[in-house]
Image (spheres, rainbow over the protein chains, first blue to last red):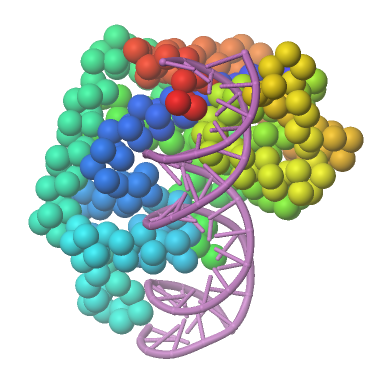
Amino acid sequence: MSQAPFLPVLRELACCYQAFERLSGHHIRQVGLTPGQFDVIATLGNTCGMSCRELGERTLITKGTLTGVLDRLVERGLIRRETTPGDRRSLTVTLTDAGRSVFEDVFSPHVAYLEPAFAQLSATELSTIEASLKQLRSVMEQGFGDCCEKLNN
Amino acid sequence: MSQAPFLPVLRELACCYQAFERLSGHHIRQVGLTPGQFDVIATLGNTCGMSCRELGERTLITKGTLTGVLDRLVERGLIRRETTPGDRRSLTVTLTDAGRSVFEDVFSPHVAYLEPAFAQLSATELSTIEASLKQLRSVMEQGFGDCCEKLNN
DNA sequence: TATTGTTATACTCTATAACTATA
DNA sequence: TATAGTTATAGAGTATAACAATA
């Protein structure tokens, strides 16, 4: 299972991501949001809205699924679908006031929650980690296009 | 959204993992396996089997879900549930011959598929990346226990 | 013809909790 | 009492493809 020298890296990547998911997922579910829903809220936070297409690209949720995720968020009054001026095929998705306040109530404490753990790392260490991740990602994206594109058809 | 200096690291981690999922998920689905099913097969590969509890801990699949995943793999003849000598509550899950050959047919070509991309990285670079991931994970696991424990009750 | 988003289908995963058998 | 797995339930994500409206 460890013939190839890069397998430990991939295993560690998976474990690392799962640690992150567990750490953040716990917080998120307490507000009654699923990871996908939080992803949408977090992506819309601090923006003035975007099309479903762009939202799908950024969250990596395919368009068929996205419709359902957005439906549930609309039901809960957290987002709004508006017609996009200039292109009547497109819809612009924005946070409602309630959505914005969920974003603030969840995201900021979330950051605050993570803060002490990350305080142990120096700026240099953080840069090294970020550089490592970027390098790893670029290797895996060889010929597959950007991380956040081309998923919705 | 980027007040905290560690947020870019988390964003990059998520993107990096998604790149990996996309890269490997594509291959896996072609064999008709879901990520969870592949996870089980890969975890059982090169072992002589393990209990559902251990399998759940390693794959991070909770026990309720695991039953269903295993059912589907049994249906397809890829795994077997056997009684564990010494503890009649426990079941030992092992790959069947068919399961082992799926493991070999999928996993090795999978590694071969990834190989050229990773060949660009030197041994030193790989170590740096692995060290970064380990450091990042350890920070996120502060007080949360090991990556692969305590998920099933 | 191509793009945006919705609908439809069938399957799978998720969280949770109650339950059986065994220890 | 605690542990190993199963069952049950309700909700949500996934892949895929066909579809309507617009460009």
